[in-house]
Amino acid sequence: MPFWPDNYPHKIYASVLLLDGKIESWKVGQSAWRGIGSITAYWKMDRINDYEVKSACWLVYNSKQHNQIFSTDSANWFKQWPVADDFYGAKPYYTEKGD
Image (tube, rainbow, N blue to C red; front, side, top):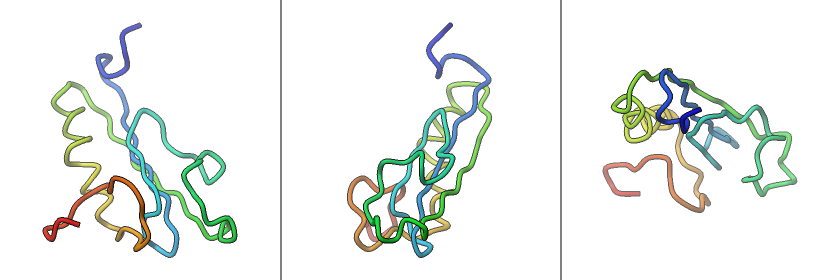
C-alpha cells in the first residue's frame, strides 16, 4: 500500500486541545484526537476535567488539496480560538502582529 499522502482520496484531521476557550495544544495529521486520554501534550493536571478536544476533517483528492490543508485551511480553522498566553511551541497560526 502506498504511503498515506500518495493514496487518494484520504482524510486529514485537525485537532485542538482547549482550556478556558484557548488553544493549549494542536495537531494536523491522519488521525484525530478522540479525547483527553489520547493526548500526551497537556500539563495542567489539576484542570484535567476542564480540557476540551475539538476536531475537523477534510477529504482530499490530490496533492494540491493535501498541501492546502496543512498550509492554509487548518490554520484558518484554528483561528476561531486564541492561543493560550502560556503556550509553548509552534503555534497553529500567526497573526498579522507575528505572534
